[in-house]
Length: 345
Image 1 (cartoon, helix red, strand yellow):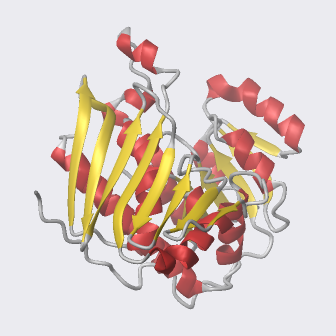
Image 2: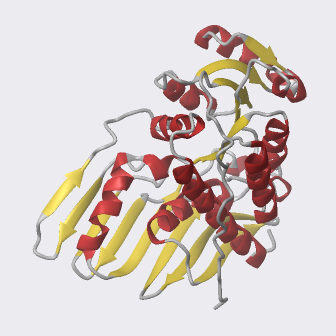
Image 3: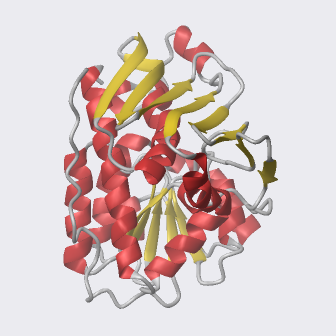
């Protein structure tokens, strides 16, 4: 078993020079499948106003349609032009994984706060550079990861002491990818491209890792066992060892099974049939047989709570909370780096 030590760095967020963003006029980089969910949730955040969207020229027709449907004022087919737009305060980075770093860096250098899709970056070095740059410029830098902000997740934090000593944590997020058949035919799309930070770890298991580390923090040891095809992990099992208990974190894009989240202690357990990215409901049960189902997310849009949290941070309400959240993202990045190193990803 490989020993695994993570050093949490402090002061990696913005300092007191961050005065907050008032209007939060936002430009979107990317026109992928996450965009409808983002626009649906963003419409419920009064501080956030989408004013521009950018993608490649081959997506221009889609951009024009989105602009009409959502009242977006400007479309760009050149990202450099959009980040120079002086009317924009925030850039939402929703491009393929391997482009997160370069797009976020350009936005920060242009004086824009950044909301970056998961996974944050391809490496810890990239993530630390962005964090330092955001601090230097007094800007907000935030990883868009849904589960950290769900009311259901906050309730799990509250209930954890009731479980007693945690013994086993098990999370499975598996879904057969619509692109896997093409991959088997030899068509390499970004989600299965090792050169573009694809694979089950970066696409799905990252949600599980956020879920686990947000509750339990730094693991003592890590091992990643992956099913490798053509240099990419199409599925895999991540083992995180903590004092007194073990977590298994499963993700698959080449097969499917019912998703689940189980946290088992010597006084009770928490169970959910939801994947870690939506976490719609869960059941708490103690050893006396008393149980209760929680559905606290109120069926809100999946991205609503993360955008609400970002809006509050971008306004400058709580820099310390922002620092904690970025430290969490760096911790997740460190786990991803080690898992990828073990499989030469």
